[in-house]
Image (tube, rainbow, N blue to C red; front, top):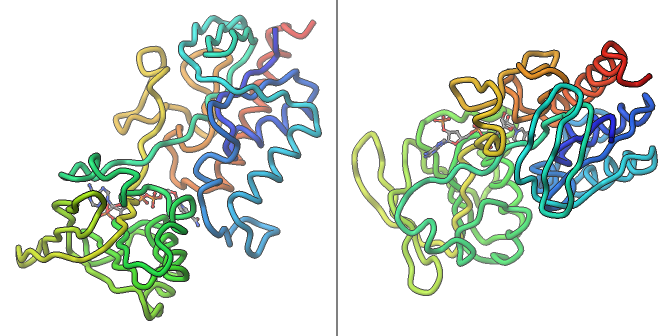
Length: 306
Ligand code: NAP
């Protein structure tokens, strides 16, 4: 039996692993894909202390190597079910089952869909949710980015460097993302802003050829020719496997305060899966450190370690 199983290998999970292994807890990280989560898809990170500019892939690789060096075990597999039981939890996965005294849920969040005609049809044929992963396929082409948060602003800046033109389409006339990023976007010569506008359809033949855009102030509709449509309209917390077993907030996040303690004993929630004020890499890391500390305290208090 492990002292701690961490589900999810994003910044929250990897930091939890670093702190837990340093505190002497036997630790396994369970991840279905690859390390990094959303961070791994971020083109350029310029607000993580100590790194003026670093790619999400590089920062993810550094965190994963750090956790591994300290003795954290990593296991690849889809978690299919969790049977929570105070001090003796059973995590069922597609590769093997894991018994553990404590659990940190660090599953992060997934891309929200726009829900318009053409979105599913052209996924992978011009519709993308990850500029870093797919941007290169649109080198020299015209693309659009949908959304007004930090991800949309960063994606627009990233794509502006490699594409012919970027149209940034946002449903309001003010951005949700940082002013500093919005300033950079407004100064980029090949980014065009379509504000107070929504995409109503993604059109094409074999691949995306255009998007239909409606101005929500005037109700006027227009067509924008693009080969790629990058959708960055927010995230939905990945709570599917625990939805009926753990307390959630009205927004669908796991209910856990700054202590990361959920309503279940010995079970903690860290990173974007937890309802919080600021969804940043650094705050996910902070959650991971707190959750690992809490897991260690829980084991010591319960006397499981003796
Ligand atoms: P977000 O901040 O939730 O922004 C989502 C954007 O999509 C908003 O502008 C929202 O419009 C728009 N939107 C939502 N649903 C829509 C719909 N159905 N149709 C059209 N537009 C829609 O999401 P995010 O940009 O993915 O960022 C998630 C979190 O990660 C945030 O806390 C963000 O600060 C953080 N993050 C930080 C960094 C960084 O620090 N460098 C980078 C990336 C992300 P409204 O504004 O009108 O609601």
